[in-house]
Length: 146
Image (cartoon, rainbow, N blue to C red):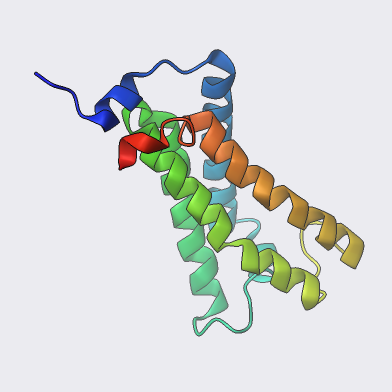
């Protein structure tokens, strides 16, 4: 039986550092998602742009559920790691405006109580996108999704 390009990409070996990174990223996402739904809910509300036409709490809850789902997928779906990597990268890109909103609206949360700290945090969002793509091999195996 002939394998599809996606099946070949899923079967392609991944390095131990990539696997460890994928599992770590997935675990961090699950933890962050749980914190959205519980103890850090108020802090996450500070990141919701005022321009969104949705209730801030609903956005925080929905993004928490999305993070738990993505994290669990990163940890458990090794065979679907390439599309999950792209979805995680898209998620980190989609929530970037929340980090910008926190900076331009001078909203304190997570110990980010100065504009400098909030600005430095912006640098890490592209890092999360890159980590999503690297740890899952999504960038390396991107041709498999065509």
